[in-house]
Amino acid sequence: MGSILSVCYSTVAMQDLKPWVRLSSIYVYDDPEMEGLDTDGLGRYLRARLPEVKVEARGEFFTHQLRRLPEDEQEKMAQELARQLRRAEVTNLVHPAERGHTAPEDPAELDLGPVYRAAALQAIMGVLLDPQENRLDCLHIVLMGQALGDWDETRHFRLRIACLGHPSLISTVGLIEVPQRPRQYEFLRAHLLALGLDEDLDDLAETFAGRALGYGDRRINDVLKGYALMAVLYRLYGEGPCADRTCRLHDAATQEEMLARQCGPKARLCPRHSKMLAAAGGRPE
Image 1 (cartoon, rainbow, N blue to C red):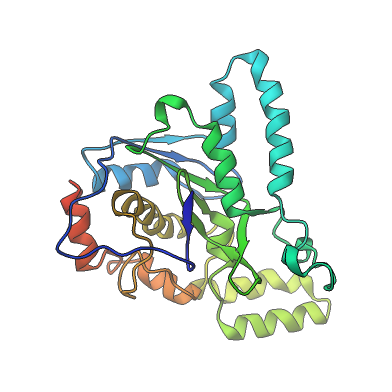
Image 2: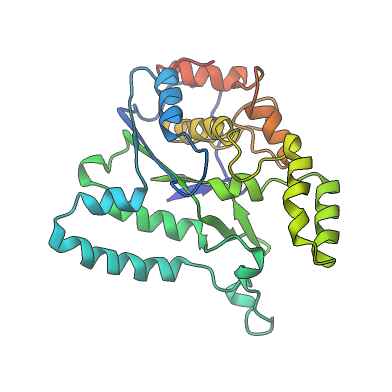
């Protein structure tokens, strides 16, 4: 259904800038659990970048999709949805093929709430889409407060920021937890936890606030612009993250690199992706 960041993505030859599809609509779904998130602002940003495309900011994905059903079907669908979500939830971080001889690893130890297999969750959401909007020219971008992940080729479970496809999922928790924080922060945090000084963790996070995203951090709205554009370019050209470290589509490995690419006056697409967006009728920054 999609391409997961840091795993696989295709490339497009520079001489071929014709998009594979023409977007008519973009729907952005809110994550109501993330304090400070401005979904309407993200919608306005995408509208400015793609003036020929209808952009609509919506509420939480599951709530929106269930509400469009007749009342007598909503409860039945909600029960089936709960069953499917339980199947998609990761209850053991050990790869299924390794569980016969490896002790289980509880995702609860990550302290991130429920963790879902990205591709499985994407498939569940794809089935729920309104048939009238279940088309290639309609891009659905789902902001969500749940952690996403999948097992990589080495059978290690990796948390992900996004799963691009239909729909495209962006984990707001992933934006905070996946890119590596400064080493000094991780060192001090480990010592505080070992000493049982959990009450000092907030002060530590405040000390490093300029170098890493935190919960309730309004800079997440700037960072989301780059990942939303990544979802757009993926739909238009089938291309994922950019190898150019100066581009908003670069899949940064660290918090500091991500903030440098997504926040401030230098936050923009590389020349190559600017041309690709323009070729699709967009307006690069």
